[in-house]
Each structure stands twice: as structure tokens, then as C-alpha cells.
Image (cartoon, rainbow, N blue to C red; front, side, top):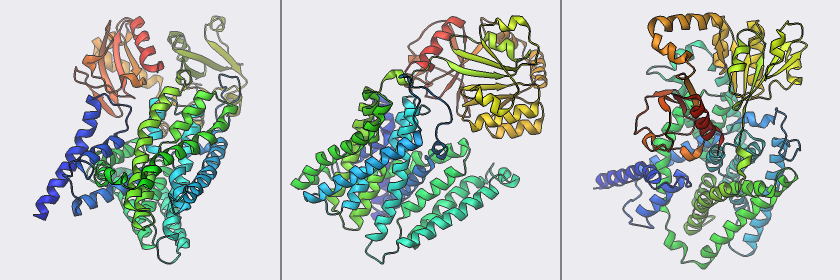
Length: 617
């Protein structure tokens, strides 16, 4: 009977996790994070609702694994390149220089933590909480899982304000996770073994250098394909190993999982690996954990105790105060709406509050009712604060009018392209060496052409050649092209294209995410296409029937079926590229943010559609 009951509960939870995103999509509730919806569904089927799910060995094990994997992905989400600070020179609409994102984020988080500590003592003073340390961690934490998707939807992740918000959340995630481990060590009931955490971090450092040593070995690349998938095996081995070390030294297992995620992030995994891990985590284990959080939460019990009933609104207000007051520091650079919107988004808390509440309840520092109240407030913030952010944040902050393109080298390859690019969509600048003889007609071009002394990196940097969205390097020297292209990637240029003919050099650049082209390659491809598919070549070379790429950046059209696409006109969808997948479009195909749409049709209509999908938010 126990076996049957456990399977029944597991089936109900799996079905709930499967149906929740479908219901969200059908009900057009895109404002709500999926993980929050999973907790709400858990409330409905659990103790607060129909009570059809009961905790057992199956669900307890899978839920724990989901929690561990969630902490791992929280560490993996941290992009440490952001700590390098802004390399590009930017100007705000007010004319002021943008602030240093890293410095500002440290100042803001310091204010958040100090104010959280003060508010925590307030909760202790009025008798709603016994432990100020735990309450400080709960108030000061910020949910990366809510902040990152919201910033992506608003298309401001790469902007200065987006980087500031992201860095504050990252610092909060790191600091509160480490302090939570220290808290568990101090208040765990055993000997004070905080110093043993050094063993865990030492093991992490050793494993990082081990991974860095073997990461680029040729045999690892070979074993990463097919049925071996050595990279995925290495990640899971790392997680289990660090979790085991954490438990051995008396620390929380989530610290080991979080540290594993941080190490993998530092090793710069390829996007395909990250997608695999995300798919496994958010597709299986993590939904079970969040549904079970809702299942175990008994809302009705929260209202029996007047103190718990009072704690919920006061904690929500404290979370708002702790984020909005310190974020007012940004008023030195940004308007009030932008500042307040940032404060609301940073108020969102979820994963670490659940972790802190779970640990506090297990250590009997807080009651199960108080733990439930803390989780309920975290769920409320994750629903409410992103909505306020979207309402308050000025749309003009996320608008882009043109894509900035730099051409390094003026020649018969690059110059015709600069003339044919649509000036309404692209802001093009060509850099060429002063000694080069260029036809006078070129200087009369509509595009900005700048003479430089040489193609040295310092010279180009002084000319702001890397402060663009896309750079094309075609100097006539492939070694120089490679050097400039690699430096452009270091300068965080989003897309880099380089003219390289050598296969070995081309492979090296491709590994760094740089697109390559060459006259030889283009000629061979063109000749082969003329032989094998002459009709396709006519499409590509005919101005009226050529193919265009449009990137779907407008969140308004996310998850819309192609048959319900509101635009009609002289255009046909030929292909949809999603990540590494190539999709044949049909009526039931749903569009996703980040899709690369290959279309054909009249140039006027394509330009209109591109403005709507790429630049209007």
C-alpha cells in the first residue's frame, strides 16, 4: 500500500509540474514566474487545498535533489565577467557619464545589508523573531531567478542600469549564501566548526584548477559527444562531491551545490552545456521541489497565530524598505521612476528565503508556521514586484534605434556592404589607415569614414571602434584581423566578424564565438550554390526576394502562435533558428524571445517588421 500511495503522490506532483506552464500560457499570465505558479499549484493540491499529496521517500528524495540542483543553477547563473565593470564609454540621456556598475552595486548592497540588520533587530524587539542573524539574511537576500528573466524581458540586461541591478542581485546571492552556511554552522547545535568551511572552499579551488587544466584537452572534446557526454558527467560528479564534503564537515549541502555552480560558471561552460543543465533542472527536478514547497505549506495554520498574521505584512514592508531606500543612491544618475523600478525588482526573493526558512525550521530556531509565513511572503514578492518594475521602468531606457557597426579596413569587400546596409537600422563607421589610397567618391559616402594612423589596438580603442554592437574586421592581414577580433571579444562586443582564410586560425576564432569569412570561402560557396541550387541564389541576389534575418526581442510577441501573428503583408517566414535548432515554421509554431526569423518579402515591409520586433518594447 505504501508503494502504491507513494507512486500516486509522485504522479500527481509530476502532472502538476507538467501542466502548470501550459495553464500559465493558456491563461496569458506571463507576468508570473513559473516557479511561483508551481508553488501555488502545490498549495492547491497540498495541505492548504485538496490534500491529495503526501510526503514520502520518493518525493522527499526528488525534492531534495531539486533543491540541490536549484542552488547549483543559482551559482551557475552568476556571470563573473560583470565584475570587470563597464568597459564601454556610455552617456546617459541626462548627459552624465554612466557610473561604475560594480562600485555602485557594492554601495547599494552595503546599504541593503545595513538596513536589513537594523530592521531585523526591530523584529526581535517587537517579539516577532528571536534570531536577528537569520532575519537579516532573509530581508537582505534577492532572487536571481526572478531578476535575470525580468531584465532579459525588458531588454536592459546589457545596459548600465541593468548591470547595476544584476550585480546587486549577484553580490546579495553570494554574500547571503555564504553567511547562511556560517549561520548553519554556528547555530547547528554541534561544535562550532565554522573554520571547517575553509576545507570546502579549498576543495573548490583545487577542483577549479583541475577543471581548468583538463577543460581544453582534445580527448575531453572527443569524449563530450555521443553516449559518453563526459562534460555532463563531470558536472554531476562535481555537485555530488562538493555536497558530500559540505555534509561531512557539518555545513549545509546547498552550500556545496552553490559552490559547484560558481566553479562551473568560472570555467566558462559553452552555451550548449548550460542549456542541457537548465533543461534537466527546470524540466524535471526543480519543478518537483517548488510544487512540494506549496504542498507542505499550510496557509490556514498561519492565521491561527496573531503574531504570524502580523509578521506577513510587516516583513513585506521591511523587504520594500530595505531595497528602495538604498537604491535611492542611483538618483545621482537616474530619474525617480527608473530608481524606484529598480528597487521594486530587487525586492523579489524566493530560493534563498526558502533555504533559510527550511534550515531555520530544521534547527528549531523558527516554527513551521513561521517558516510557512516567510515562504508565503517570498512568493508574494516574486509575483508583485516584477509587475511594479514593468509598470514603472521607463520604456525609453530599453529602446534602441540603430545597431552600431564598425568596419575595420576599407576595401572592395567591406565598402559595398556599408553602402547597402539600411541606414535607418544600422549606424556604420569605417576605419581605414591614412596611407591607404581611397577613391574620393568614398569620402562622399553617407557613412562615417575615419582615418587612423594604424590598426593597433590602442589606436582603435582611442577612436571608440569597440564601443559598438557589431564589428567587422577586414584589414587585409588575417593575423591582425584575428588579434583585433579577439580583443573585440574581450571588450564585450556582442558580435564579431573577421576575415580569415587559414582553417586553424578560423577554428581558434570560432571557439571564441567569432564569425569568420574569406574571399576563397565565399567564392567556393557561391559556385557550389550556383551549381546545386541556382534558384536559391536568385533569391539571395534579387533585392525584392532576398532573405532577411529578424531577431525577436520584443517580449510582447513571446509565445504567440504563428497563425495568430498580428501582422499581415508581403512576407513569408522561411525558417526559425532557436539556439542551435532549425525549425520549419507552420501555423502551430510558437515564437520565442531570442528566435532568429529568416523571412523573405518586400524590403519596406521587412524594415517595418524589424522595427517592431527588434527595437520596440
